[in-house]
Image (tube, rainbow, N blue to C red; front, side, top):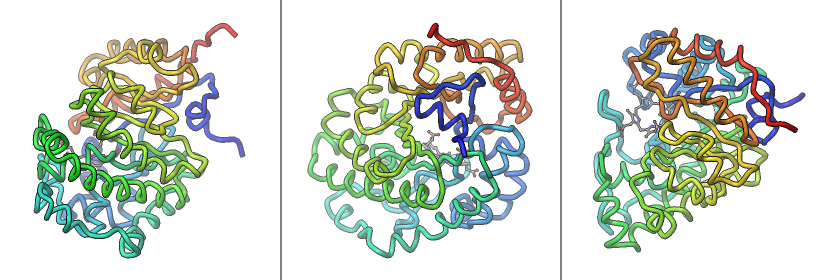
Length: 348
Ligand code: 1CP
């Protein structure tokens, strides 16, 4: 059976019709999600295979997007490994004990057979999802070491990731040990999803834009590479995404990605000036247009298609996640509009 066009685009084979999915397409923008989640905490819903599968499928059914993104969270692996972490409504991930000292790092649970067993509900959820999705691909994901470690060090969401960046500079030895642990944590979470049936992966380094190139290269790139190496022997595209990371596109690709997600701050044609010509790209409709007129949304979508036309492959997405208060009909209409468009081909 031929691969879905979305996977083809990620492999550098262009289709006439655009392929699209949205980061955070599952979740609070959908009334059916809010109804299903009633009475179950976010992290509990992630480790209930039937629930995680159903939530993953909801936006695919409703919007007709070209891929599912596995419903989970970047801190789910930490929970499965035994750390105390919860997702507080309206806040985000919060750790019971921030990881800041040598003793904290010493106390991180070993990632042995127990962790592999703890991943069982993830494998089961992926299997259930893939069986229902049919020919629509499932994208697995994990958080990259910098972004996940930032939640662990700060203890929760943070604007400037100061403690994390300070640890990196003042105790590079401790940072190294923490990031090595997270790379293994996230890498094995990715691998479990692919072995259970996910056909592409995305490594989210959402907050890496807080770093300069030098810090990234010295303290982060090798750890992201270690996470991605867990799936490098498997035949799946590896998308890497960061917010405000225009200055890091090449080094992030260099961590072993095969396609780059680009946020809405950088036009795709500008990203293509920096990336090797054979790099497929993903993005990057500004989520702000979801709150404007249909005319403005479609104009933005056309602009994104044009800017991506010269890429080796292009998967349309938002520049960051779907905001929770988005009108779901706006997304459904945007998908239909994109599917009605033809990709302008560069002269062959
Ligand atoms: O109660 C709720 O509904 C909580 C909201 C929510 C949801 C639906 C959170 C809390 N996480 C998720 C699911 C989730 N998280 C998915 C799967 C759904 C989908 O994409 O359709 C994915 C891919 C993530 C990944 C994630 N979690 C990232 C990387 C992507 C990004 O947006 O940059 C990050 C940074 C997180 C942390 C997180 N989890 C939740 C929140 C509110 C946050 C961000 C908090 C902050 O500002 O730091």
